[in-house]
Each structure stands twice: as C-alpha cells, then as structure tokens.
Image (cartoon, rainbow, N blue to C red):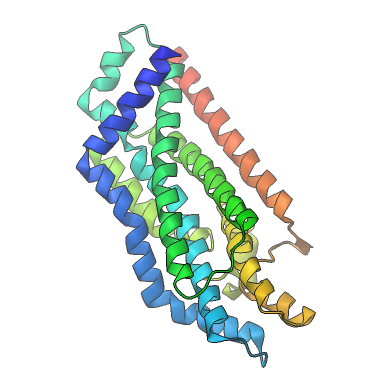
Length: 294
C-alpha cells in the first residue's frame, strides 16, 4: 500500500508540475462554458420555447433552464475530455523512459496501473468539481433552484462520469507511446465526444436513425443523467400542466428512449456503472496479457 500511495502522490505532483497538462485541463471547462453560452444558448432557448408552446414562464426560470442545459452539457463532456488530458502522464512516462525504469524495479505492473488510474481520478475529479462550482455560480446569478439532495445527486453524477472517463482514457492511452499520438487522440476526443454523447445539441433534435445509434453509447446515458438532475428541479419550479411538463422534458432530454422504452434513472446509473466496470476489467486484462506476451 505504501508503494501505491507513493506512486499516486508522484503522479499527482508530476501532473501539477507540468504546466501544459495542468492549464490545458483547467482551461477546457472555461472555454467550453464560454462557447456554449455564446453559440448554443439561443439554440437551447428556442428549443425550450418550442417545448413550452403557448405556456408562459418567467425569464428568470427560462434563463435558469438554459443555464442548466449548459451546465449538464459542460460536465458531460469535461468528465471525459479532462480525463484524457489528466491521463497523459501514462504515455509521457513511456516517452521519457520512466516506464522502462519502473519495469526493472520490484514494483508490480498492476500497482503501477492502479496508481495511474487512481491519481487520474483524483486530478480529474478535482478539476470537474471546480467546474461544477463555477457552473452553479453561473446559474445562481439569476436565481437558485437546487436543494441539497439535488446538489448531492449532481456531485454523484460527476463522480460516476469521472470514473467512466478515466476508465475509458486508461484503456485507450495504454496503447499510445508517442507525443504525436497523445495530441491526435486528445484532438479527436475533444472535437467528437460532445457530439456522440448528445451534449452539444439536444438529442431530441437528431433524426430517428441517429437517435437509435447514440442510444447504444454509454456516454449518452451520462449526458441524460446530468440533464435530469440539473434541469428537473428547475422544471418543477415552473408549475406547468402535466402535458406541457412532459413535452418540455422530451425536448431537454430528461426523457430518453431505448427503442420504444423509456429509460429510467436507475437504469442509466446501471449502464454507466457496468460500462465502467467492463472498461476497468479490459484495462486489467490488457496489462496482464501484455506482461505475459513480453
């Protein structure tokens, strides 16, 4: 255990010492928040107006709803993209030769792999929680609509999505071995993931074929989970008729369907947790297979 804790501390220190990795990870949520607020706020507002129909709500609630949509989109993306940035140390150790140095020590490969995973979880979670606080302040400027249980659910979502993002990045980054590969994967993930998880545009705006495709992607369930816990408290404050509330929840992706079946929140948790467990198992198996192969 002492070796594991020492490696975790070493990885965290190296991450924060590397100004490039640290500032890239830290500034990503801020950039996304500015981009979302600048280019997507009006799109979201129009979508919400369409969902409300002739029902009138206050500008404060409508602004809070837009902010909640931005909030959920930002965290759904950042929990994965920041995980890839934070997990670059694994690849950099290969580039610098540090991984080869560890290979000739008594430290087990499984301990090394676990140290990379846990240190990345700690770093990514710290940055994402800071982004969560920033988003809450952004929403709170216009009005506060979240209770303590709502905040706890949001934090739980962030933690689970960070675990998923780090598991995914650990498996992918394990096969990388150069600085160019790091840059290429980081660029692809940053530019593509937001689209395939339904964060950039409401899933309800996609055509039926695309909705069916992304319903098989676990990241989509993370986005919808965040939508539920950031938007439903605000929608409840609107005191809408039952039909109007259901229609609005369809528009903002609080309701998500797999085929013709409505996916419940517990099922979303189960999908993300199961996917995370599978990714971690694959990561462990790859470590063992590579060790035996060598």
